Length: 238
Image 1: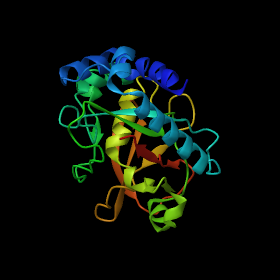
Image 2: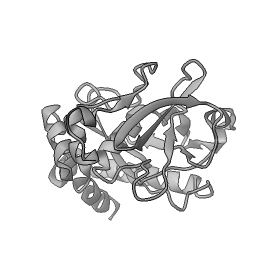
Image 3: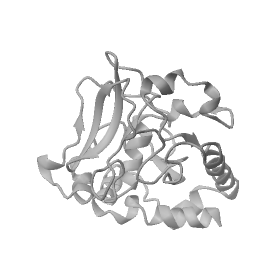
Image 4: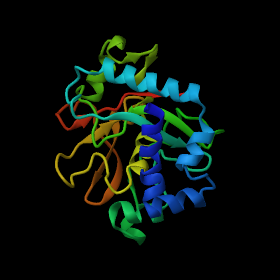
């Protein structure tokens, strides 16, 4: 049931259902993650590991603030040698996500940001990751508070999930979301996702958000811990 449900969700996600994203995937030389592809690409044991990872994350973080709003599921992260999701993507991919074309669709990336960490390495066209797949993540305070927390707060199945709170995963989540963008002010509560897995840049913390029809990779105060600051724990399903 888990595998069939996730395959259906992924087949209907932005990767396939959002035309501009779908065409960008094709231009990148990636196979479209259709239901047929996903059934062929990932065997039953891998889907079982994916199920256990999603359940482990859900159970571990069930008492976190906003856990009742966070949706855990499977995110597909593309091969970064073909489609790098750590920063700006081809503006044409955003056309059906933000309703903007040309220069208006260009992502906003703080110039001081380095390339960012890869937690999914090149080699596989698509890698499943268990993480938050809904509009917003969990609240654990500021970058500094999260970094200073006891490792047990974030460790699931022996993995410190803070290490996977990076731009690569958030960027893939934005694309997979199609035109129902996460961390976006449209339709309700605006949030932004922190990346504790990335190093500070001149004392500032990296985060991602969608604001005023722009996908934004930003730097901001590392001690900012208001309720709109969110994180998305993750486990790579190897």
